[in-house]
Image (cartoon, rainbow, N blue to C red; front, side, top):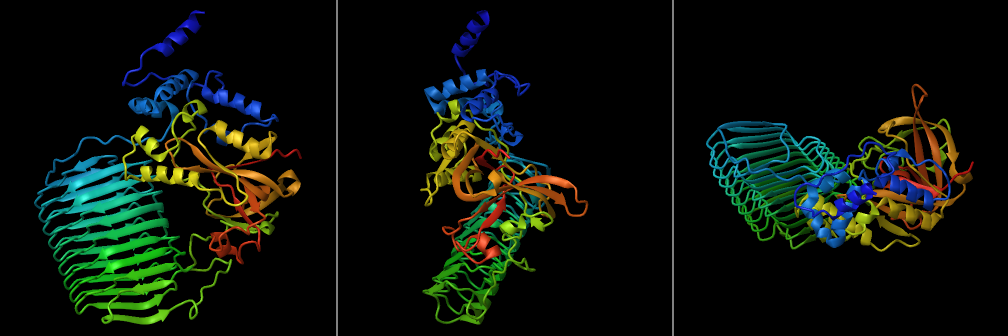
Length: 624
């Protein structure tokens, strides 16, 4: 009785803004945890006694029953109150929360070296510096949700050099903002080497970069290469500059669904020199927007070499490009030789310019619109379109073929037989680690982007804030024909949805590990679930959110397989793969990567793929 009284007395204690004491979970066997409660819920909803796979059990909340009750009580009164207890809430529930920025490091010795820095605030850093070098190495290396801010960096400096090496490589949900960088500077060099390489969901912003600069040089080497699903924005870049030199070498190459926005770039500049070499090559669905680019420049040079070569679809928009310039030169070499055609729109290109020279050498592309462009001074050499240079969509991976339509990402059902050697794509989970919230808490947090951003104190304009808005938008999208879908913000929600579609006799499956990724594999024994019959399943895919949210949807007319994955050389088993084959593809887009890789088009073939790490599929339990 005394223990019960103490428990209820503890719940009635007033909550302060200080950190709440939380119970550490010592063992998953503890019956007084939310994880144990969820297992009991699972057993009630699902009629069989199949084991609970570790890949989903590991994602269940680590909260104790006491801690869950505390945070549930806070959210019940007003979910906004969770913001007051955010540090303890995120830590005890294993959530993904933004780091608080430390106070600004504004002091600046003549020479500075920063090694292994992360989540720091550099405001007013390097202002009025004379000579010297600031070096940043291994900055925010491999972090989840790094948030780095450089405000008013290097303003009014003279002859000061800045070097950024290995900035935010391998990061997850990277936000890096350079605001008012190098304004009113004289001389000096900015060198960005391996900037944001191999990051996931980057959000990079350069605002008022090198504005009103005089003779300053900026070099971007390996900028955002191999990145996945993010954006870069350059606003007010080199505006009213004099003799400013910028070079982008290997920009966004091999990136997936990356957007680049250049606004007011080089505007009213004098004798500026901008070079983009190997820009966006081998990208997948690149979205590039150049607005007011080089407008009003005098005797400057813009050069794009190997622009969007071997990319897959995507869109480029050049609006008000070199408008009103004088004696400026823009040169495009090997422009738009895409693996799969996208669209290019040129509006106001060179319009109102005097004695400008704009050259396109080896221009490839259909769906191209030139509006209000200069009638003189523009020269097209070797102009190609699909009628004169068709691009094959063979299923065989050839040298130079777009890397995002790699063999092994999609395959035919006939490949799932013992003895087949086939490539396996990278199936690693690129999402940051998080846990489910129990329904008692998740159900009280409004599933609205503005509310989530406010409650979790996510700075607007960051990669994480953008991801929250994207996730909510995807969840609000109307389902496709024949599709049932639900965004599940708790494990209870996911179980309920799977049972509502498939019945209570269900099982959840995923590929066991990531062995074999990016390698050739040998298929061993193959088993078709439910006797290999056409069935239905519920596939669940991670979304980016502070806590685990899965986009789950019913997938009718599929066959699901379990396959041994063997090492080609040793013939030893290294993995157990789960593959799903979509029998009806008639509603798929003709531009879907599966048809680019396999041909011939929607409704004409079945398409199979592996279930990647972090994702899962629910099926009717197999009794064989």
